[in-house]
Amino acid sequence: MTVGDEVTGAIGEPGLLVLLGIHVDDDVTKAATMARKLHEARILRDEESCATTGAPLLVVSQFTLYGDTRKGRRPSWTAAARPETAEPLVTAVVDALRERGARVETGRFGAMMAVRSVNDGPFTLLVEV
Image (cartoon, rainbow, N blue to C red):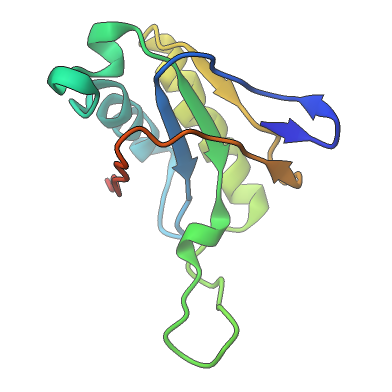
């Protein structure tokens, strides 16, 4: 992951790319639960998890996951938490992952980030708490 020419986060081995959207109704009480679900999700090869294999996680804040396109041609972002609410919650999830012993890389909140990934599978999953 880069911001401009700077690499802000990278994992060089199989792991999880986590696009983390924060909803307007989310609060800090959900951070530990989300971290546990991400860390222990048995979605790697042979039904392993990051917790059992030590696989890293690259966590990217992604408010656009809550874009509502049901009406018109322009998405509505009303379901996405405002930056002043979302940033501490993203940090709380990252901190909770690290407290669990997870290896975590991150982007830079609010920055225009370029994310490069190799999707092994493909396998994409929506994890909600």
